[in-house]
Amino acid sequence: MNPQFTDLHYLELTELAALINTGEMSPVAVTHAQLDRIAAMDGELNSYALVTADLAMAQAEAAEAEIAAGRYRGPLHGVPVAVKDLCWTEGLPTAAGMPIYKDYCPTEDATVVRRLKNAGAVLLGKLQLTEGAYSDHHPLITPPRNPWNTDYWPGISSSGPGAATAAGLCYGSLASDTGGSIRWPSAANGVTGLKPTWGRVSRHGVFELAASMDHVGPMARSAADAAALLAAIAGGDPKDPTAIPGPAPDYMAAIRQGIPGMRIGVDTEWNSDDVDPAVQRVLSEAMEVFRALGARIVDVAFPDVAQSVADWSPICAVEAATAHQATYPVRKDEYGPVLASVIEAGGTLSGIDYQKLLLRRLDFRGCVATFFSAVDLLLTPAHPFAPLSLDTIQTLGAQPELILKLQRYTCPFNLSGNPTITLPGGFTESGLPIGFQLVSGHLNEAMLIRAGVAFQSTTAWHRRHPCA
Image (cartoon, rainbow, N blue to C red; front, top):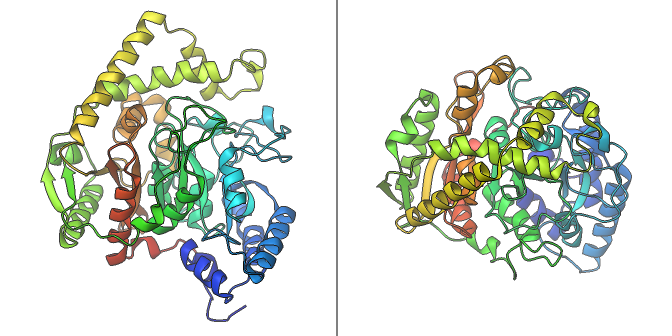
């Protein structure tokens, strides 16, 4: 291995891809190095639910042979990645953070996993998550730890993808987001996360939490890396009728475009109301970077989200109760208390009350669509706090107002289905990462990628890493 690549594990996916394509880097050597790093570090971080070492080495050897023969498939070919353990993997356990599924081995891959394989990616393993992708880890599961400081929150529910991607234990990952589960871990771990438009990425073979709000998307070291991963997995799928038909746009083309003239909306009141000063500072500095890059910063008033934030939980509860009908209440005693409580709540809502929720959701979606006719992007916090300690997180169950505050900038965009990108934007005085969020109109992921790449071309927050 070339001695100049002393921080091989922290190369961006697209940087590694270029070296593999030219033959400067071997997929076999890179995969071996990644497996060694996982073995050395993940005992403390607990980011992996399953390491697929034999499969990874076989895929790396196949990729190396294909590339040597001139059959290069693109930027994921030979690159080691990992997926959240709610994505089916043929013949391998897919537990979704639930001990009742610890021995469940699907007979086919999730569509997103199959597409990663078709792109030539190397699968290092399955990444840990909260139980059923809801808000808490099952009591029998050891939660992942934040590699910046293990006393701090790694985010939910994609805690494993966030920790592994940040710590250099994969070059990118696939995750899911139902109320903030790509955005919170991205912000907490200092990585880039892209939640696509609902339906842009197939959900076939991905365990449901709340089907109408579940989004599958990438977590990566940069916006360019997220674009490469999204390009591989996006597009219509006959196995998922809710997936948007036809091919996705050329997301890799977006990384070569700038943002002069792009209209970025900023709701100053919403972004500052009960928002930590450190987060406000990050937003202010990001706004100045975008202005210097040629974007137009537009003062806006975003539609009120209070009702939508309140409505997210009952909608999620009803859909979660539907998703778990096969195992709950039949195997109720094997569930953790938090997921069990939300399923129980979902079974108590009347049809009339649920219809009221759906009508309010439709109104909100319409208001958001109208909003994005006037601007291209919206700049918001990923969450209003500076990084949260585990001690604080453990009090959330007794502080419903704190939960609503945490969800204020995330779950509205699961209800509306709008795409978002989360970018590292700064650090606290104690050295913990702070992220921010950009939101766009439906199917405008390319605009988010353009803005993310432009921001990261003149800042280096995404190039800071938590450990050697």
